[in-house]
Image 1 (tube, rainbow, N blue to C red):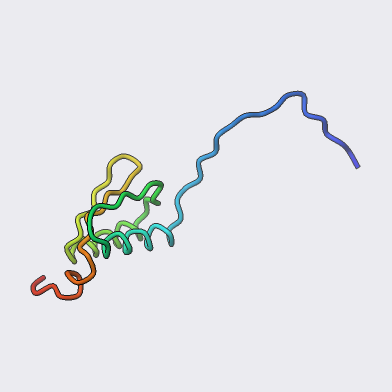
Image 2 (image 1 turned 90 degrees about the horizontal axis):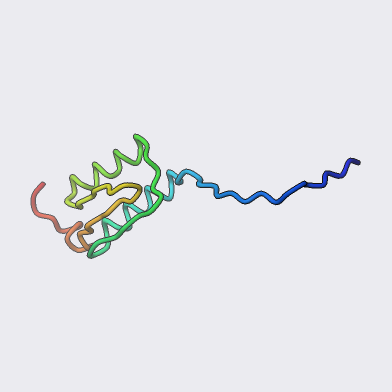
Length: 85
Protein backbone atom coordinates (compact mmCIF):
# COMPACT_ATOMS: atom_id res chain seq x y z
CA UNK A 1 0.00 0.00 0.00
CA UNK A 2 1.25 3.47 -0.89
CA UNK A 3 0.92 6.34 1.53
CA UNK A 4 0.46 9.81 0.12
CA UNK A 5 1.69 12.66 2.27
CA UNK A 6 0.26 16.01 1.16
CA UNK A 7 2.73 18.87 0.81
CA UNK A 8 0.21 21.53 1.85
CA UNK A 9 -3.39 21.94 2.93
CA UNK A 10 -6.06 22.61 0.35
CA UNK A 11 -8.80 25.10 1.07
CA UNK A 12 -11.73 25.31 -1.34
CA UNK A 13 -15.44 25.97 -1.55
CA UNK A 14 -17.64 23.63 -3.54
CA UNK A 15 -21.09 24.69 -4.73
CA UNK A 16 -23.35 21.82 -5.73
CA UNK A 17 -26.35 22.23 -8.04
CA UNK A 18 -29.81 22.20 -6.46
CA UNK A 19 -31.99 19.11 -6.34
CA UNK A 20 -34.90 18.86 -8.77
CA UNK A 21 -37.19 17.00 -6.35
CA UNK A 22 -36.43 19.38 -3.47
CA UNK A 23 -37.00 22.39 -5.75
CA UNK A 24 -40.44 21.01 -6.77
CA UNK A 25 -41.37 20.40 -3.13
CA UNK A 26 -40.17 23.82 -2.01
CA UNK A 27 -42.13 25.56 -4.80
CA UNK A 28 -45.33 23.69 -3.97
CA UNK A 29 -44.97 24.20 -0.22
CA UNK A 30 -44.19 27.91 -0.63
CA UNK A 31 -47.20 28.33 -2.92
CA UNK A 32 -49.49 26.77 -0.32
CA UNK A 33 -48.08 28.94 2.48
CA UNK A 34 -49.33 32.43 3.30
CA UNK A 35 -46.87 35.25 2.72
CA UNK A 36 -43.51 35.42 0.99
CA UNK A 37 -41.03 32.53 0.90
CA UNK A 38 -37.48 32.63 -0.46
CA UNK A 39 -35.88 29.51 -1.90
CA UNK A 40 -32.08 29.57 -2.18
CA UNK A 41 -30.17 27.23 -4.49
CA UNK A 42 -33.21 26.11 -6.50
CA UNK A 43 -32.36 24.01 -9.54
CA UNK A 44 -32.92 25.79 -12.84
CA UNK A 45 -34.30 23.30 -15.37
CA UNK A 46 -37.32 22.79 -17.64
CA UNK A 47 -39.19 20.61 -15.12
CA UNK A 48 -38.94 23.13 -12.28
CA UNK A 49 -39.80 25.99 -14.66
CA UNK A 50 -42.99 24.13 -15.66
CA UNK A 51 -43.88 23.57 -11.99
CA UNK A 52 -43.41 27.30 -11.33
CA UNK A 53 -45.53 28.12 -14.39
CA UNK A 54 -48.35 25.80 -13.26
CA UNK A 55 -48.31 27.26 -9.74
CA UNK A 56 -48.36 30.74 -11.27
CA UNK A 57 -51.47 29.79 -13.25
CA UNK A 58 -53.10 28.84 -9.94
CA UNK A 59 -52.33 32.33 -8.65
CA UNK A 60 -48.97 32.13 -6.87
CA UNK A 61 -46.50 34.89 -7.74
CA UNK A 62 -43.05 33.46 -8.42
CA UNK A 63 -40.00 35.50 -9.40
CA UNK A 64 -36.29 34.82 -9.64
CA UNK A 65 -33.82 37.23 -8.10
CA UNK A 66 -30.34 36.02 -8.89
CA UNK A 67 -29.87 32.59 -7.37
CA UNK A 68 -33.04 32.88 -5.29
CA UNK A 69 -36.72 32.21 -6.01
CA UNK A 70 -39.25 34.42 -4.29
CA UNK A 71 -42.74 32.94 -3.92
CA UNK A 72 -45.78 34.90 -2.82
CA UNK A 73 -47.98 32.07 -1.55
CA UNK A 74 -51.76 31.96 -1.61
CA UNK A 75 -52.48 30.16 1.62
CA UNK A 76 -54.23 26.79 1.41
CA UNK A 77 -57.88 27.91 1.54
CA UNK A 78 -57.46 30.30 -1.40
CA UNK A 79 -55.87 27.59 -3.53
CA UNK A 80 -58.68 25.11 -2.96
CA UNK A 81 -61.57 27.61 -3.14
CA UNK A 82 -60.51 29.74 -6.07
CA UNK A 83 -63.65 30.73 -8.01
CA UNK A 84 -62.26 31.54 -11.47
CA UNK A 85 -59.18 30.67 -13.54
